[in-house]
Amino acid sequence: MDKITTVIAKEWAEVFKNKLVLFSVLFLPLILAAIPLVMLFVFRQASGSMSAELNDPEIMELAGALCTGLSAADCTIVYTLNLFVLMFMILPVAIPVTIAAYSIVGEKTTRSLEPLLATPITTAELLAAKIVAAIVPAVLATWVAFGIFLLGVRLLASPAIFGEFFAAQWLLAILVVAPLLTLLSACVAVIVSSRVSDPRVAEQLSSVVILPLILLVIGQSVGLILIDRQVILLMGLIVLVLDAGLLWLAVRLFQRETILTRWK
Image 1 (cartoon, rainbow, N blue to C red):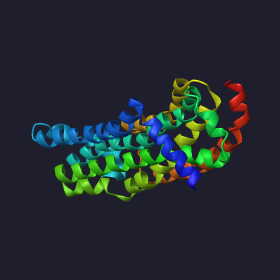
Image 2: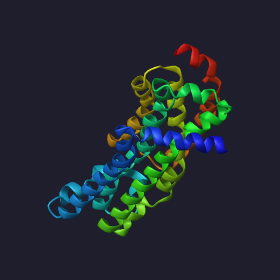
Image 3: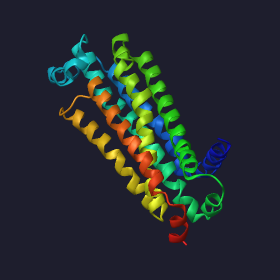
Image 4: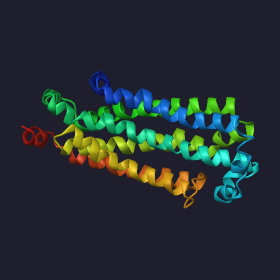
């Protein structure tokens, strides 16, 4: 355990020198929390002049069970903000990519990987340390950003609207599925980072894991899919299975001797 915590501390000391990583962890969550709150504030200030737009029956039809018990205006606001809340599912995928993709290939470029691999730490311990170092900041940043969003909704919206974002499906998504997505992203980034020799290539290839979530956001925005509790549960189960497989694959593909000789 001491070996893992030592590597994690070293990892954070190195990666947080990178301005892109700092932006991703500190400012990106705040931006994603602020955008829907600004929209909510605009809706609230212009509720009278926008009454026709807010009482859109097409939105009620698209939202389906999402708007049960809500007025047409509240439904439109919930459905619109729901698209932005989905962005909180992208946060735990985007942040580990910038950290974990740099974790191995970045150390190789700075020539700090060889001494690390020469220590008695096992491959499983090394990868566990690097994955934990990537997922902890991402999970905390996601939870803090969503907490800020909930606080803003509580202050700016009606209790009915606030209740929709404090419902079981979003608590499940943020508290359970988001950490699972973070682990998925970190595993993919570590696998890619151990196979390439350029940090930028590692980050670009690892970013592919964000695409399915972006497609979900687009799908709901055009009415093709509604992200409800069943979809969140299904997503969690799929990601859990993928996490188990990728953890096994990461250990299998990480060949210490091959990495050292191939990158000479």
